[in-house]
Length: 303
Image (cartoon, rainbow, N blue to C red; front, side):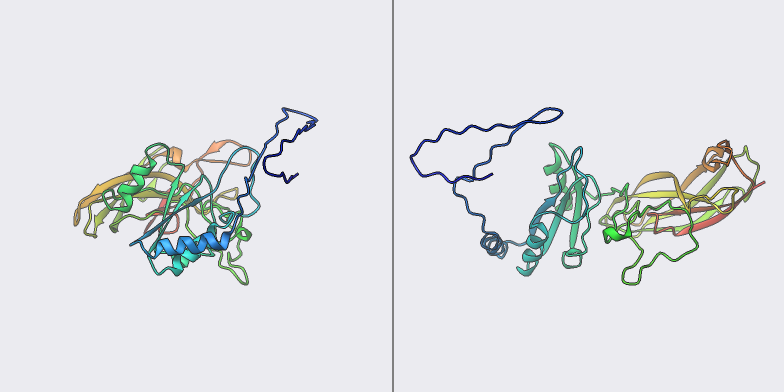
């Protein structure tokens, strides 16, 4: 309900409100004659952007209990703001604040950098500044999948095989950013995966050893990820599952031998009787930088 009041006049206001269950509350909002003019504000923002070397936009979502989202794009005029800032001709960095997936298909191709800061807390400003200025080389990895569009959902990395293709008639089935994805200011090379044994008994351990090299010109950390797939089982198993990961610091040009231990627990599954078992057969061992960048693969046979 909105009311118009004349200046210097006093008004007696009585509001009656009843909540059928739970706690009742009322929010009183007054505009004080503030007129929202989005076009004017955007024009002012573009004018300011033209005076800057780089534009940093803090965008995001507000989350809480009973606040499900039907759409995953940035709410309000945020996407319009990003695209208007791009028109300024200055490089645009988008800081994403939020705790869940956000679609970016309306603007992602127009900005050179996106930094997902989640809910960064009191020291978030310092951490963001250090990352943007290159004083800190990030190594974070996504614990969720970011879709291109809501119509792709559900979209999880550890889905069951379907026998069908993932693509739509007018949209790729690939995510915008997959589970485990993340960038840094350097690059890494994976090579020379070797299993200590190619065949093991059900109670045995095996090691997967590979070489990791920093091929960039900055010191940095890589998060190497180990995924396993049970190739054939008595119940349908996921196409891959994250079983382990390691964060490795490397100087420019430095390489290290990295070892993952694969223990029997990593090969277990719940069978049709809901018992935890290891079934004989082939297991695909995969190592890489994300669930969609599995560069090294070997097959392990369980007898």
